[in-house]
Image 1 (cartoon, rainbow, N blue to C red):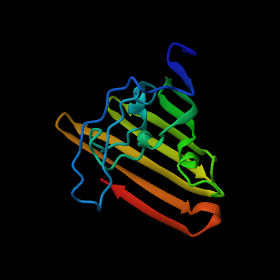
Image 2 (image 1 turned 30 degrees about the horizontal axis):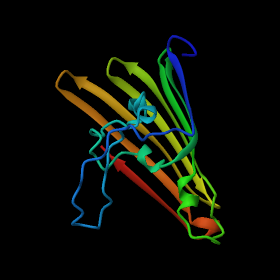
Image 3 (image 1 turned 90 degrees about the vertical axis):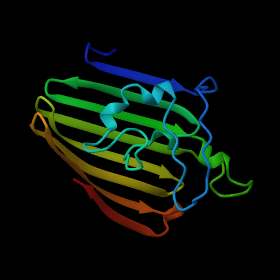
Length: 186
């Protein structure tokens, strides 16, 4: 703990071999990727800050932050906490898996993928907040960047309004094709 409300976690070349294994899933429909929930303690602790308003539990395919994409981290740091009406989280990890799974002689062999995620929420009162999220993933000259905002407003004891909007920009490896898009849910 940095303070009583701010926590710093770090990992260096972690061994997640003792983590519970994933349940088998039948892959009949290949249009969508198989979704496995996070079970590694470093990524699970304090992960609620990275959930956007209106998103369901971990079996929702609408999660903006899915740390299972970080396969074999060399190192990682995470800062989570709150200061006054602000709650925040930051996650940085360097994943060595993408460059290790390439054939020998490929120009991106042994390169690492860098993940950066930053999240902040401002409390508007009990059960009410507005938040922002920024993510950046970079590998071999390509990137994927996502920024967005969300709102959760409790109208009364039985009604809630929540939603988010996300914008993304991506570039293929080694400076290739660029794409972008916007998604929202209310």
